[in-house]
Length: 319
Image 1: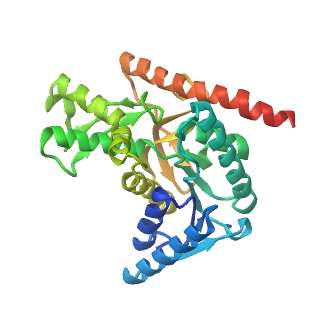
Image 2: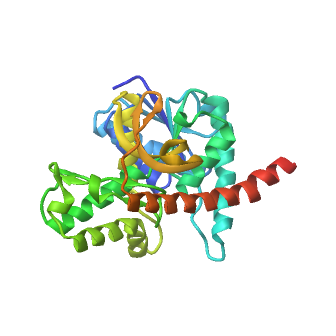
Image 3: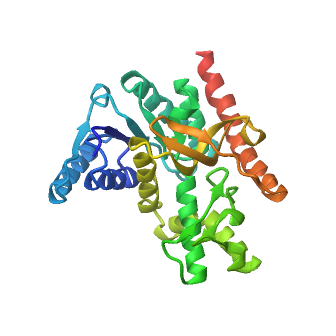
């Protein structure tokens, strides 16, 4: 175990599950939890501390009730934000969560200047953009978790269709975290065998559609709430890659600066994760149809960013 500190802002279902995974797997030496609900953060820290003792883990979990207690983190995960409520427009949700993200980042930059930040809050790509804008940090330090989750969902749907290959499936998804994501069948394999040699075009198209709606399916079944085990575990993989400097390639949301022909926009692409965060962006050789789909995905994120610029950042400048 590295002598490292991980902080989690927001201990709802995703944040609490992630904290449990990190603490019981002995991934870091110290785990700091922060949430506006002080009773919840204290309860979660106590519960997880007891779990780590059962697991004989050396990780120490602490609740942070003040900003200045949440400090000197190597990696910080932000899950804070609200879900859409009845009567709220998409823009209302976007602006509300951008306000929360900006407030969180203002505190992080003050007390955690060397941290790598992983964003899990939705709408994910727009929140990565908001965090970068609020902090003025380099793009390697603020990364969105979505591609690993979406790829894991695609892997499951491939297994579901095949009925074999569990643990041997490598799936790849690019683009924004939403309906416009781009599952890449060409870059997906089962034990090294390309997907199109194992499945028909019809089956692959079904897998792609199910992947795009993987999160919505869980929301529909739960009725209140959304997925948290898969998002939390996916985030833990990113944290391990950073803390242990694994140089692993994962699909993550990052600011593009010329890659794939785009600038000043956040989207999910393969990156190399190490101690410095997003250390390298991998440019895949996409087919024309995939380039068109990726363009549509980028455009959907651009709409959100344009709304943020017009209704949030411009209004902030006026004060």
